[in-house]
Each structure stands twice: as structure tokens, then as C-alpha cells.
Image 1 (cartoon, rainbow, N blue to C red):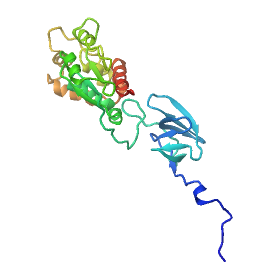
Image 2 (image 1 turned 90 degrees about the vertical axis):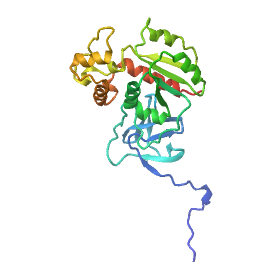
Image 3 (image 1 turned 180 degrees about the vertical axis):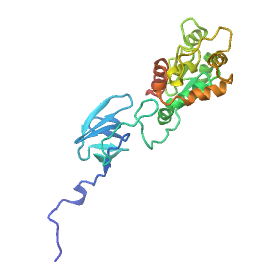
Image 4 (image 1 turned 30 degrees about the vertical axis):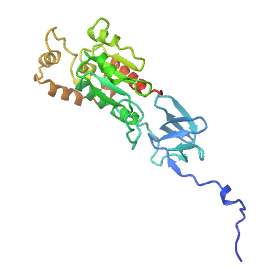
Length: 267
């Protein structure tokens, strides 16, 4: 005789199996009840802590079918490898292991020179690729108003500009003030050159030397510190000592974060 199951529920009414996914650090999921989306930064018995890209944290229970992973229902389970520790990028953001670079946005971030671009890439490169933000350098900002006009910033193509030595009364200040587009944001740091944004302690020096006016600043720094007067080689040595945002001055950190937020804000 044929054996029949005691469960008479039609197959189309039975819940579909949901995969179990270990709550590994950096795993990005969404809690559908609240719409909160963030990366796993902590997992205790029965709960998981998520952090979104703005640093906001929420704690949720580990319950069946409790989360969405790339739009699919999953059940988060505690990782067998033990307590979850947050994984961070060089900028201090939550790392997203295996994340693909986003297609480049129409918006851009412009910086003054190659050294500026290399430093931004060093610390914020992972974040910029996930957000699809391209950084380009200008070789100076004397023609900035014309550059902004040629770019043609708009709601879906915002432009952020990072300027060296942006201090009231300076030439750089007057140039920045002449950019009036609501879809362009010009910010800057107070340092004469991006070199100064690296903390002296990270380089093993007491402080950045003062260079007499009229003398090339980078050459003067090399001379005062007893370095070979090869500014390209000196910069590579400086850059090699930058491992994370902790090696940079807050006056630069805040401005770069501000530009990233501006360029990636919804239209």
C-alpha cells in the first residue's frame, strides 16, 4: 500500500527552505521589518549588531528568516569561528569583504595634485570603489571656475573639490568663493601642501619645518629634515608611512568625508 504523509499541506503553501548564513564580520544584510541595512560588526548569543555606512548601529535578534542578503531571505547564525570582530577599511569604515566596485558615478571629486589623489586613494580607496566615486587631480586650482563650468555639475552629477591651503584671505579662498553652483562643493584644509596633512609622529619627526617664503616648500622641507632633495622620492616615503586615517590630521579627514557624502547623496 502507498504511504501518505500526515502533512496534507499543499506544496505551494509550504514555506520554502531558507539558507543559513554565518554572521561573519563585514557581511551586509537588511532587516526587512525596519529597512535597516548594515554590516555585521558583532554577534552574541541570540543577537547580531549591524552598522550602516553613516556609523549608526542597531541590534537585532537572530531569528529564522530574519534578514535579506542581496534581496533573498536568509537566517543568520552565529559564526563557528567565534565572536565577530569588526573589520575596517583604512578610513575606519566597516569593510565589505568581496564587494564589487560600483559602476562609476557621473559625479566626481577633484583634488589639486597627484600627491593629493594618491593620499585619498591610500585611505579612502575601498570606500570610493564601493560608492563608485572617481577622484581626479587638477594640477592646481587657478582655473577652477572654468573647470566647474566645463564639468557642468547637476543633481545626478555632483562635483566635490578639495583645495590645499584654504584659509580666509588667500588666493585659494577667493577662487573657492567664486564657485557658486549648488551642485558643486569646494572645501579645503589649512595646510600649505597635502604633505602636512600627515601627522609628524607617523613619520618619526617632531614637526613639519617652517620654510621661508619664496622658497619651494617641498624642497625646503627636504632640506630642513636632511632628506635628499628629491620631492618625488620623499613623497613615496611619506605615503608609505600612511596606513590608515589615524596617520592623518583631523582637518583633512573631515573634509574628505564631507566630499564623499556630498557626491553620493541622493539626487
